[in-house]
Length: 101
Image (cartoon, rainbow, N blue to C red):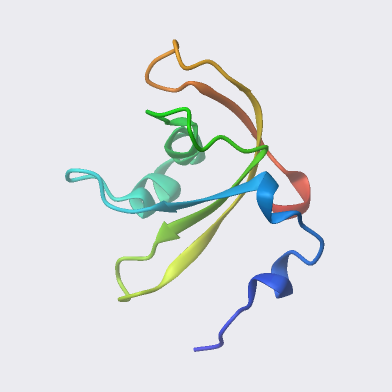
């Protein structure tokens, strides 16, 4: 398996503008299954937030690729358009950054 470095994907980022989302199994739901079934389901995984102490301009998203141990699938870079912590269950309004779609 070829190792891919972050700098191979994104070469000019400001790390403080990003949070990394490691999407993994929640209850009986696998994020990979939602990603495959309907991209809008996958988008909701990135919109979900319960705390307001780690908001950033962008979300660098990874999906647990459960068929292979310790393997992650790139899930895109999302721009956070707005965040309303009074809105449940999805306070983030986001859009996929075209360059990393």
